[in-house]
Image (cartoon, rainbow, N blue to C red; front, side, top):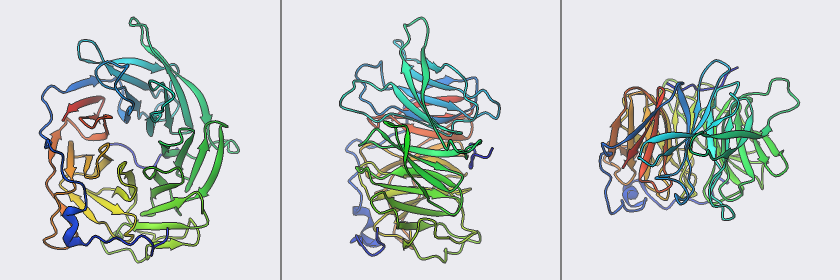
Length: 399
């Protein structure tokens, strides 16, 4: 069973008024308290298995010790994959507070907490993908024994004996009953958790889809990336069209020959040898901003959906292939990345250099080095901490 990458609108609408020369003023001003090197009092938790999937709850900290809960998922080739929840103990250490009551048959390619809601005080639901989309509930332990994570919903293509693996998903922050999944079978599926049925399924790319995300503040628009090397934008109100926002260069480094913009159908072909795009992150503060990177690349492409065709900024400093990226909560300019060079970098997109060619940022505002390749990262709800997964460990960094 292949899971894709492993760990170690109208093209003429919404034209951007920002020029490359004025790029530095495009993002919000830097925070009043500049980012420093992470505190030496970082917290570490060691697991018995390789950690890949990672998500820090975005719920407010009230009702939990220290900081919010952190969900972890394993990436093992055997049939015993795990799902755990960590929390800060009374003495300040990371501790396991819940674990799945039965092992998962396939690796967890992504885990997410349910988005914050006004009708609940704390998060007790989380979801994973791999072979299926699974939704779990979590019960709190009594202090002597950890709580349990119990599967409540199993969603997948029930017409197939062996459903195509799911590479990623996103949980809509406005409508918590809506989840969109990405699959190696080239499709994206929008699920309704209230009915446990698919609302719609569409062929999103002409090759495997590796990641998908809703854009900020909407229940209708989502973007995806895949093995065909394209970023595509979809609107659930008009699925007969999709917009190609960006296409990665071809294998020899030359620009892609396909012109980005409106396509008449969602699976219009891209150039066959374009570098696959692995991950995609949507800025929570700006509906127009996305960030992505290609396979075996050390460069992040920051995109504006109003300017399809090329990146508005490139982030270049990693010495190894990038594995994950995530915009900081409540920020238009701060972005974190991790890579095979064992580094976690935090970037301020205001620090762009337009001296020649496309705008570039080569100096992160924060750098931290792990003991081995960093597979994943996740921000805390307040944006004052980062969690990094490497090997069989996770580490919380206080910014």
